[in-house]
Length: 157
Image (tube, rainbow, N blue to C red):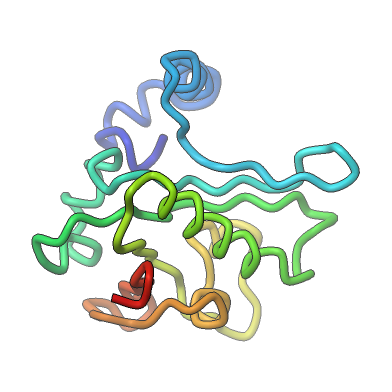
């Protein structure tokens, strides 16, 4: 919900109210992202949708639009602790691109962080640059030393 709300809205409904807001999105029929499963259990989450679903991106100096091209955005990952550092992000990114393509996307955009020696569990929530590169994304703009804007051109446009 971080990217879907203003900071004050997010703070006012932190915790259970944000969970309820996400459930309301699901209940409305909108698909707010993808789940990954292992042995029938959900182990990871990726938030992917048309950029317009994430108005907070527009308020970010670092992540504002590159151009007027319509894009889908990958803004958030969560991987269960037992499954971290096992390479799940690359196939999950590929699945996100495929999902976006099936829904009409021509460009999928991500905003990963540059890896340092070791990221804490929450620092990589938008993904890491190396995984995006391995999944075929290329850097198109960098307004921050640690957070590039990366794109995948669906169909190799």
